[in-house]
Every structure is written in structure tokens, then in C-alpha cells.
Length: 280
Image 1 (spheres, rainbow, N blue to C red):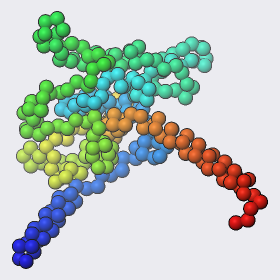
Image 2 (tube, helix red, strand yellow; image 1 turned 180 degrees about the vertical axis):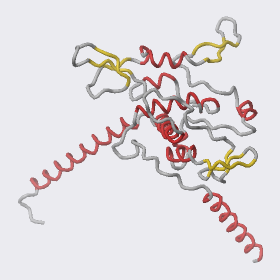
Image 3 (cartoon, helix red, strand yellow; image 1 turned 135 degrees about the horizontal axis):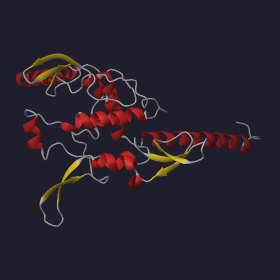
């Protein structure tokens, strides 16, 4: 009897301990993202800026193994290219992103913007003729360059911590993009050794130093260059990377719901017609 009570007490304390640890992290704050509503879509300008923040800041430590450079220029991608007819001159002009006036989609293999993004990256590869390691410019078929060759090197460069892959980070964390946004803006400025205080991280301490600072990444479109804006933009980009077909899926959902509504109306009218002379 005593052993049973002791075991029960230990179990209760363990559950309470887990609940307490889980409760230490604050609930993510709302980032008011454009894609959160049932019919919402991605702000592609924010996705483009978020990619810039990732490339210049986050990619020094975090990989995105599930994303290839060609994905940036596919339909629904932030650098998808369309040839749109100029209403004044009548000539076809390149336009990054889907235009309200339509346009002809340019295959990603012919997209100069995506090619330039890929070629700006140095990829470690094996020479097919000599079998020796070689560095070459990136291709659109390459996956995003890894900052470290393996986990051991990543841990050695980050004080034993292993920076997680960001390919599907918004799906892997409770709170999604709101969690990422809150984490990046949740540093209090206090630190203890190699740990930094962050109320949105479980346990309240995180090994990653504050990655964003005002003015660190220049924006060409005039958007404010604040740490909060950087966090919002890169969270939008990471949500797109996690779910690049979200807009297409939502559109299909609207079509399906409309079809079901029409079908239900026809079935009801058919029911009334067939049983119009019958009493119920």
C-alpha cells in the first residue's frame, strides 16, 4: 500500500513538474500575419524581404534542407516571374510575382532572378572528372547551402548547441509563425554565461544570441529596418517555406465549398419536386 502511494505521489510530482516547465514559456503574441485568416494569402513582398533576412543573418547557422533554389521561382514562389503586357506600350515586360492583370508564367529554368540567387552561393561538390572536392557556383537545382558540413561541426561552432533546420520550423513548433516571431523579438537583454533570457523559449533561457538588430539588413523598398520588422518578415518567409501551396489549397477549398453548396441546393430542390404530392 505504501509503495503504491509513493509511486502515485512520484507520478503526480512528475506530471506537475512537466506542466510547470511547459508553463514557463509565455504564449506567443499575435504577429497579425496576412495568411492567418481562412482566405488570407502571403504578402510576397514580406516573403522576399524575409528571404533576404534569412540569407544575410539566419543562414550563417541554420540550414533549410528541404528547400531548393528553384522553389523560389515556381508558381506561388516569392521570385516567380511573369511576362505581363504593358497597357500603355503593348509590350511584354517581366514582373516578379503574380500580377492582377494576369501574364505568362516564365519557367524557373529561364528565371534570371532565381539563377542569380543560386549563383551567388558557393556549393561544395565533388568534381565528376577527378573525384576531388571542389567549390562551384550554385545551381537552381541545388538545395539551400548548409552552413556546416555536419552536426559535429555545427555544435562545435555554437558552443555545443545544434541550430535546428528551418525548412518546416513553423509546423514543428506550437504557435507556428507567431512563435518564431515572438522568439526573435522576445529577448530581454539579460544573459547568464552563454544563455540569453527569452520568455518565449521553454525554460526562459536560449543559447542563440539575439540575431536581429535595427539596421542590420538594408531594404531596397523603403520598409522600416527594425528588428521587429525583420522578425515579422523572416517569420512570413519561413511560413511560406513550410507551406508554399497554402494559397492554392485555400482557393481549392473555396471552390469545393461552393460546389457542395450548389449540390446541396439542387438535392433539396430535387427532394421537394419528387415528394411534392406526398404528405409527411
